[in-house]
Amino acid sequence: MCGNMKYDFYKNPFFKVYATVENGRVNMHTSGLASKALKPLLSDMMDMFDGSKPALVNGESLVFSTWMPPIPGKAFGRLVSSQMGYMRGKWFLNR
Image 1: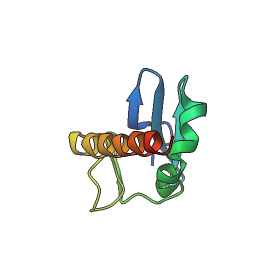
Image 2: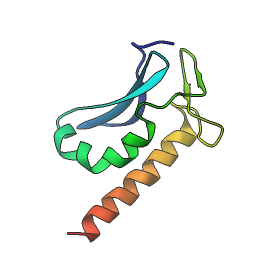
Image 3: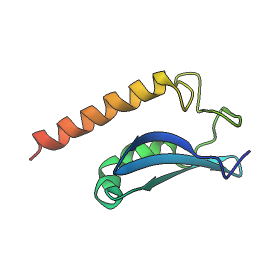
Image 4: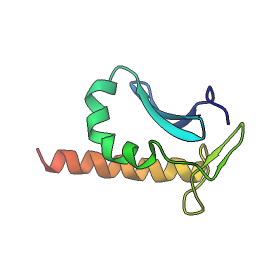
């Protein structure tokens, strides 16, 4: 399994969430200018993947299980976009 390959979960100009696979386990990471502010808001979602053992890893994609689309991919992008929209709405409603 490839530890230096990055699998993008979410990316915009200010914030990026990505995974690496090391010793057969997924490690979740964030980077970017907004990382310190946004990481706590996404920690529950990231914790769901962090430390898990993926079903399949090849050079181009990461598959967690049969219930989740491959990463990267259009279907996974739509899933993440809907979750990010939910998180933004939840954050604004609680203000």
